[in-house]
Image 1: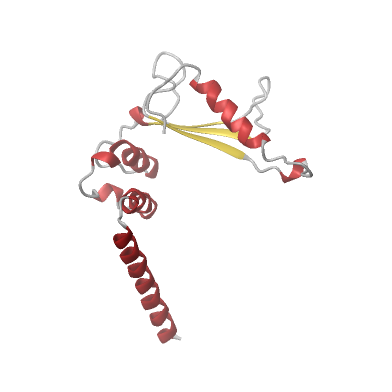
Image 2: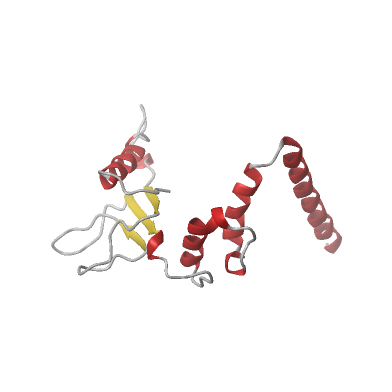
Length: 161
């Protein structure tokens, strides 16, 4: 997550994503073995401010395009941006992308999980910061509780067969 827009931010992004693509090719590797790379940036500022020009939405996806025909190609390096200030979802976001924007914008301020964020992938993301603060004893109890749940599921599944 990028909190501040800094000088040459876009160049730094291109450099880091291109580097992630290039370092895959170790000694003895072949070009077909390269995996595509997608750089994901969550910005707490408007990278492309709303103005008189074409509107760039809150969630934008970028890749190479042939300039004359408009044909897209070379999909091996792509960029995705989520510009949080462009989120208009308020405190009750409906589309999933708005739920994620609300999550990233408000997660540090939440005392309870609002209904709008009770969506499985978002709940999973909220679990990470919660468990990161666990003591060793709390972590052990958390793992034991998860194992107990899995054991119950397994027992129910076996009983049904």
